[in-house]
Image (cartoon, rainbow, N blue to C red; front, side, top):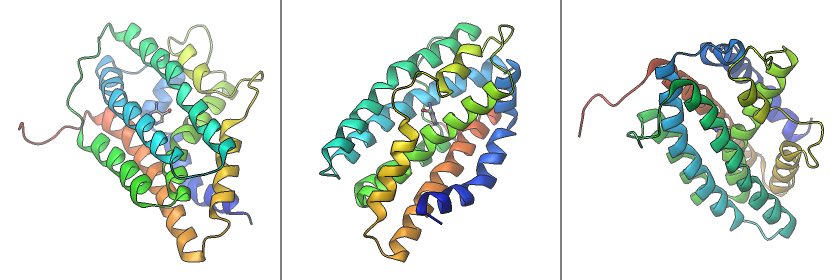
Length: 222
Ligand SMILES: Cc1ncc(CO)c(N)n1
């Protein structure tokens, strides 16, 4: 079994649970309460800013110029993500107000910074991967279910994240390929560390949906 296959096998139970999360099922039917969409977008604005910065940190951890170029290209996807946010905000009529970063968002972004800053190149790739990979799975599966129909106000949101037939590069395939190369010279315990980093990010993805669904906040105002 390759390293990527091992990761994907261990990721499956978490990914299956994300697919049946009420928020994700709500996206499939186009029914998500406004408060939940607003909370999600407000938190995702924080998240995506940090995602870009951690991508920049990851760039400094490799000397492979092709990987560097690809990482910089993935940062360009951020403009699509702004569109994804606009689709949700058009439904609710909300404008981003820079709400306080929630405990779950803080925990996820702290995990990203810590892994990328203190870890190897492989750790940095692994901490970023579940973000794009899990949304790619959501997009693909919702399109396969026909959820991107004209009656769904989140149709375009789904299509932003689903792989397109005319995509020139399969970035998630490249991400796993880069990770495979990055772990090639690591020993077994270092490899296990990389898998843990990936799976923790994937659980944080589940928590991100869950936090929005439950509108999780800090207990105190300070
Ligand atoms: C939390 C989170 N994970 C993944 C994505 C997809 O890039 C996103 N926009 N937000």
